[in-house]
Image 1 (cartoon, rainbow, N blue to C red):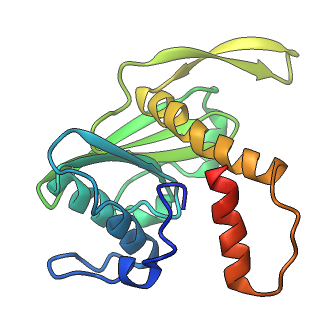
Image 2: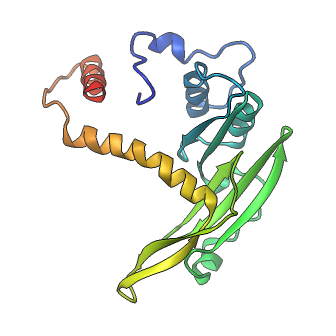
Amino acid sequence: MAQGPELAKLRQTFVRRDGEPDIGASGNVVISLSREMPRNQNYKLYFDRYCSSLNLSAYLSQQGIQCVGTIQRNRIPNCKFRNDQKLKKEPRGFSEEFFTNFESVDISTVLYEDNSNVAFLSTFVGEMPKSDVRRFDRKKKQHIMVPCPAVVSVYNSHMGNVDLLDSNIGRHHIKVRSKRWYMRLFFIWLTQLS
């Protein structure tokens, strides 16, 4: 919904067209919302773990749209990630990168350990170059510098705006109650426009 008002053509928007793969409910929504984007002009999409998959990343890259997003580790078959017990023993800021060629598309997967471990999937950026970021250490009760992969920095810088939109909607929502579902959608849409 943050991409644009789709309420008038909601039913037609999420219908799969000829030549589009069936990636699943969330992947099909991303594909339908990306139809309006120009192809092969270095556009980039950012999404969270509910939408990302290898199939979606490969399809978007073949269409000329680069992407990066967090991904659940069980959605990446045959990838030898370390388990949670081994990752907890690693220092904060530890990361490891895996590469694959899926449907003739080079895809990078980075596992990053900060407060918890997060997996990132990208078609245009990887682990290098690393930068140092400032984090608070609870044990030492002071700020420390932690190495951070490039994919994490890129993802955080662009997904912060989505979190800001959600935060503003939560703080400044219209206080009108309605039991009709379409009225709730209308008020959400109206809040986003204001």
